[in-house]
Length: 89
Image (tube, rainbow, N blue to C red):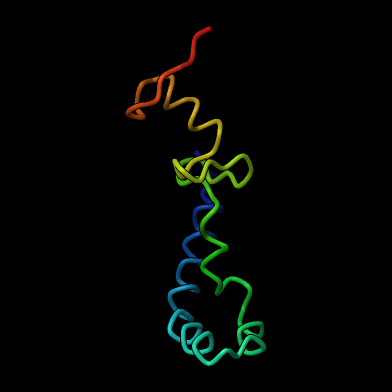
């Protein structure tokens, strides 16, 4: 499980993204990329995507399943992910 501080930081980032979403859309429509770069770093929604929802891990992220490699392996071995089976040789 992710540390509580990581989860709280993720919530703060999501609030910041929501706060600046309308302004980002307007600046993108105008093509004002200088104005976009002046916004806070956490205002970009792409900074939220590659993070495991269960463990909070950023590295070894499997985008198709929206989870880290370790979480995927645990859930797959328990049979919790439909259509995924352990390969055998």
